Image (cartoon, rainbow, N blue to C red; front, side, top):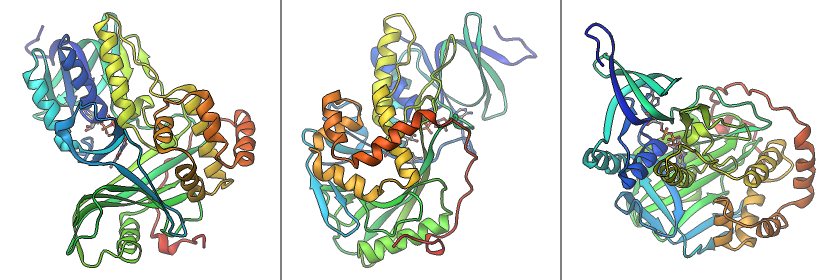
Length: 413
Ligand SMILES: Cc1cc2nc3c(=O)[nH]c(=O)nc-3n(C[C@H](O)[C@H](O)[C@H](O)COP(=O)(O)OP(=O)(O)OC[C@H]3O[C@@H](n4cnc5c(N)ncnc54)[C@H](O)[C@@H]3O)c2cc1C
């Protein structure tokens, strides 16, 4: 009930805080089952609002978001540091790209059509449990305060701090949507990791090229390391990559996107109250060794919707224990420099059947298949790392400050 002088109050069944990848995916799954009154609370603008971005993932083309997919590739390529290319066909899987703005429009329209579905443009200030569910206090764009009471709240706001971890790296990158003067790209092939770029002293760096048309592509420079770079430093690396490595000739940059994705073996809590759950990156959906999140979010959203339809709220772990344990070993082996990142990833693409490798990254392989993949890695370094891991403490890692141009830093030859 609304009090004339107090904040407005409203009752809902499910509130999803944050309308990004995981919030919208959950809303999409819940409206598909049609059984829930769902409110998505999305920041109206300002620093809390996530900028437009690109989400890529692989699937067999089951068609959940076909309208939102803006590009698809049937072949994947990795270039080793010497320039040799490994091109694979992971059939029946395809690599796909979704623009967040297109995905937003799709799910917002679905919410608008769904009885009980609603998008609320407001900033969630607090989320807390109550005796009969949970409540979200928000401030709307025009400054009104509003309290939403719900049976279940799914919170996808990015965490302010990361959980204590043994190893914490960052996948940090900047990408340019470039248009070239002549046809320069093969639109059938996505370059996942191009190690022909200069490697930093710590961690690894690679180029990533997603062709959209013969003269247009998303070209990214990415590092896995402890500290993000300044925008100037990414731009310098991209200029070198487009010019010296890709030899694009004359091109113009249409738009850019930049991001930092935590790669950590910290444990993210998924339930923080009887009726309050964390989803998405905040709930540990980011695969530590790769940064891929979108596919895990889809699996999780479908499972949450099925559980709610069955009458109970449950958020299953986004990744299995074995996958997390293997990722912890890989992160530590990269962080200590015991393995050479470019050699490691190129060897995986060279030696493991591509369909199996992608299923492995989805956590869908058997123990036997994983042992087979393990044997194609530097076994000694990985075993040594696996043995020492349980004895290392988990600790908070300080938030890293962006660093200057890669040119200015000492670089591995
Ligand atoms: C630039 C970039 C590219 C990426 N590319 C890929 C990729 O290709 N493939 C992949 O698998 N992963 C990718 N990732 C990683 C991951 O998939 C994304 O970060 C993804 O957006 C995470 O989803 P999420 O729902 O956890 O968070 P977000 O998508 O960031 O959603 C959180 C939402 O909460 C909102 N919000 C924040 N605070 C409040 C508040 N107080 N009140 C209300 N709303 C709030 C934000 O506006 C945002 O919409 C990428 C990440 C970045 C940064």
